[in-house]
Image 1 (spheres, rainbow, N blue to C red):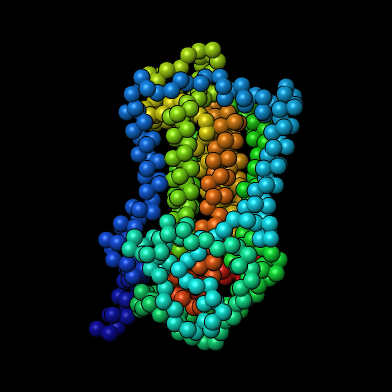
Image 2: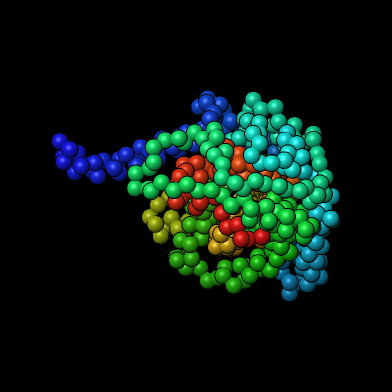
Length: 484
C-alpha cells in the first residue's frame, strides 16, 4: 500500500496545487473580511465605473427633443488650426507654448519638489509620530487600511480623510527609526497559515527595511514631493506627456495614417477594440496583485470619474467624428436618428468575414461622442498608473507604446480627430493630478506599514498568495531596494 501511495501521489500533486492556490487566492482576497463585506466593498469601490457604463448604456433614453445641437465641423476646424502647422503656424506654436507652460505649472504645483508644492495630503488616522517609535511595538491598524477594497464600516473613510489635511513639508521632517532585528511580526494576522505549496520549497522572505529607510531619507534630503513614492517611479509622466503630445499626435497622423492596407487594419482593430477593453482590465488585475492596498481603488476612481466627465461632455456638447464629414461633408446636418458607423472597422469585418464591428457601432447609444476621446483618456490613464507604480521600466514603456498606438489607431480608423485625443488626454491629466494627494498618502501608509512590520497592510495580494515561497519577493513592489 505504501509503495502504491508513493506512485499515486505525484499524479495527484497538480490537482493539490490547484486546490491550494484557489484556497489561498480566496482567503488572501478576503484578507480577513467576510464575503458579504468584500462583495459590498467591491461594488462601492467600482461604483464610478459602473455609473459611467450605466450613463453610456442608457443615453439613448434621453428624449431627442431636449438634446443639444450637434456640432459637425467645429472639432474639424479647431483641429486644423491647432495641429496643421504649415497652414496655421501661429496657432500651432501657441498650442505648443501653452502645453509647455501648463506642464511647467503642473511640475511646480503638483509633481515637483516639496519646497514648491503647496498641495496638502489627506492624513490617515495613524499619528505620524508613531514613525519615531520602535517598530517592534504592536500597532492597532484601521480596517480601512488593511484591505485592498475600502471597508464600509471604517470610521476613517476617504471622505473623512479629505476633512483632515497636513502640509507635505511635514513629511520631509519626519525621522525614521527601525528595528530590523529578527521578528515574527510579519506573521501576525496572517490568513495564509496553510501547508506549504506542493512543488515549492519553503522559503521565508524578510523585506530589507534598512535599505527602504535609506531610500526614504535620501528622497527627503532631496526635497522630494513624495519620499514614499514607489520604486522606479516616473512621477513626471503627466507634465512630460502634455508637453510632448502635439509632436506625438502629428507623428502618428502624418507618418503612419497612410496608406491603408489590411495588416494595418488588423493592428488598428486590435488596439482600438481589444486593447481598449483589455488594457484597463489587465491594469486593474496587475495593481491588485502586485501593488499596495488602495492602488486599485484609486485606479477605479480615476478611470470612472474621468469617463463620467467624458460621457457627460458627449451628451451636453456633441461633436461629429471624422467619418461623418468624410461621408456627408462638413456642411451637412446631423441628427440623433442617424445610426452609428464603424468607419475603418468595416474593412476589418470584411477581412474577417464578420459583422461584429458594424453591428456594434450601429447600435451605439452615443453616435456623436467624438470629443473627448475616451479611447485616448483610458489609454493615458493606464499609462499613468503603469508609470507611477511599476518597478519594471519595460512595463512603463509598454504603457507609453499603447498610448501612441491607440492615438494612431483612432485616427487611422477615422473615429477621432487629433483634437479629440488631445482633450481626452487632458481629462486624464486633470483627474490624475487631482488624485496626487491620495496617491501619496496611500504610498506613505504602505511604506510605514512595511517599516513597522504590519503584515496585513504591507503585503500585496500576490505576496499573500505565495507566502513562504520564492515567488513572494516577485510580487513585492519594494523588492528592488537599491533604486531611489
